[in-house]
Image (cartoon, rainbow, N blue to C red; front, side, top):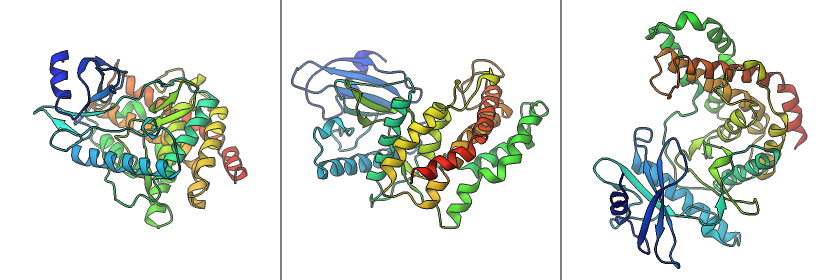
Length: 362
């Protein structure tokens, strides 16, 4: 869109200052993001985002969740005597109608205050993993007493039973005529299918609670100050009720895999123990006050669950003719699925060690 069009959208929000320019910001895959620069030196800059309503279908629910969570986090930090709270929690600007989003007839938009002098980190190191573990664990801890219920912005996002049903349906329909070529992958998945549905069973039995989780725990989903300290967790679209496994296991799915998730070099895939150990230390330090014994003892299960779940999702899309994930070549989703299955196998070989490590952190 042209700068003038974006500026007109920004004017729908109660910002302070005069818009000088609207520039592309970041390289996010879901939402389109822009940096709104203001002319006045004493006024804040802003972040403008176009919300992907193809993925997030209930924008009222989405923004309600975010408003409730950021308000709660702000009150928590103030009660703890935290300084510079505006740099530690995202602040969204309302429109002149009072909502925190604007619909222009085609797209949904929102505006937040730009937090200055911050950096994002893409490199996964033991130090950044430890910082992530502490920060995401503290995020969960701060929200344990949230009284107002939140909805699921993507229903059943991390429901393994559902993902398996979707795979089995894709196998039965065989839309793209590819089932015969993936027999080994299907056999491996079915061999572990029952064990991978442990979380849903424990929840039905009443021993595994759902908590408010971020559900997209990546190192680049937090802002650091220039000294390398974690300031603020960002990208709150998927904040919703989930098992703690979502935040713990999904981080390690990508961070502790020695190779990118679409690497075809399966023999190079290893489980990075240094990343597992660092993230787990940070996470357990900040969640010690609320994790139940059942949650804690099943953390190693979560490390295996998420590559298996993602393998199932990639394979389902491959069998359906590649209708969900963007692909660069015809076998891309199959390569991704095989990558995740190999990583799952690597994780499984360290299961006993992980269990001993977590138990030793008590």
